[in-house]
Amino acid sequence: MYISRLKLKNWKNFKEVDIPLTERVFVVGPNASGKSNFLDVFRFLRDISKPGGGLQKAVTERGGISKIRSLAARTFPDVEIEIHLSEYGTTVPLWKYSVGIKQEIRGYRLPYLTQEKVWKGEQLILDRPDKDDSQDHERLTQTHLEQINANREFREINKYLENTVYLHLIPQILKYPQAFAGADLSGDPFGHGFLEKISKVNEKTRNAWLRKIQEALKIAVPQFKAFSYAEENGRPHLEAVYEHWRPKAGKQREEQFSDGTLRLIGLLWSLQEGDGLLLLEEPELSLNGAIVSKIPALIYKLQKPKKRQVILTSHSTDLLNDRGISLDEILLLDPVQEGTSIKIASGIPEIKLMLQGGMTPGAAILPRTKPKNINQLTLGF
Ligand SMILES: Nc1ncnc2c1ncn2[C@@H]1O[C@H](COP(=O)(O)OP(=O)(O)OP(=O)(O)O)[C@@H](O)[C@H]1O
Ligand SMILES: [Mg+2]
Image 1 (cartoon, helix red, strand yellow):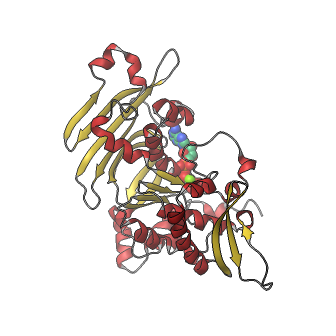
Image 2 (cartoon, helix red, strand yellow):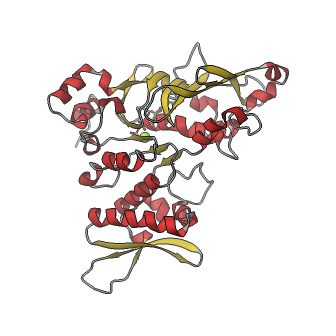
Image 3 (cartoon, rainbow, N blue to C red):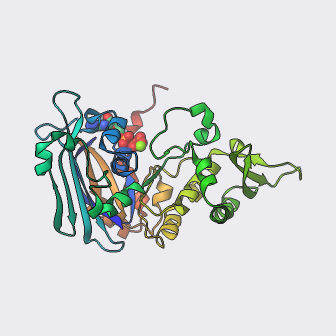
């Protein structure tokens, strides 16, 4: 399954959105245009669905409804999210899930549901608020999606959303997890527990995945020779051997790996692990352009057989220069007066023409994400 349509109302800088999504989606736009906020919609649905999660926690972790609701929201104050789920390769919805949220005006000012709906195909099978909700208002502080005894008929949606993975690996956090000890963030987005995650996979699978990563690193990282998993005093580590002028130079540990090496390891691991929705935040960071240009093909090759959807944000021309990317797969975030609008690149006639004229998607689209007055950014030097 994959998410084939997304509708939003008042989600952060998106006042209103209604767009189809493909199995692979590239989200591009200027700084602060809402790319990360766009990915956060799917993380929010995951946080509602996962065990130990739920609506209240998902909203609190984001600083409350006032932080989520678009500053441009006026006459219609509710935040609404609707997704359609379809079989891979088709666009007919198998499921639709819609949720509307508001904040109580008085009392604890808890977030509560203004509506929650589920359609199986076109048939509406959940329509809240229902009779029970009207007798007990407190029920509206929880979704049925998060409750095992209430989501039996649409558990498939819950399981799908729960398996969403978001990756924005920050090498320094992986290298020095003790220095970044604090509250655990949902889904470990920055790689704090990345090594523990590797340690929990059974040995045979782990070795098979690491071998694939090793082959890629041999190509991408000069002098890189071999790569393995090790444990010391119960703590997991990654070790690498480099070709060196001193034949017995010894192994290097993750603290000594370069930022790009670690980000590539994180990317290649996450592409192999799991089969739920994968959200990648700027996978190009720290990587050489030649490697970045291979990311779209790598995603295609590793995700297609698994029928897994990947949504990624990017600023990189190298990444979008792949001619295998279709314009339907690119979402262009465009800051307008009241927030951000989303355009599908295939819907912009000039871009279509530029591609017909031989340009790559990156060369045709990314200049549009440049700030208008960029030449003035000289800080007086
Ligand atoms: N509730 C809200 N209403 C309106 N705008 C909001 C809201 N919450 C956040 N924003 C705006 O969203 C912007 C940040 O968006 P986001 O972090 O998604 O950008 P981005 O495209 O990922 O940028 P970058 O490329 O720098 O990572 C900020 O400018 C912020 O003002
Ligand atoms: Mg961002």
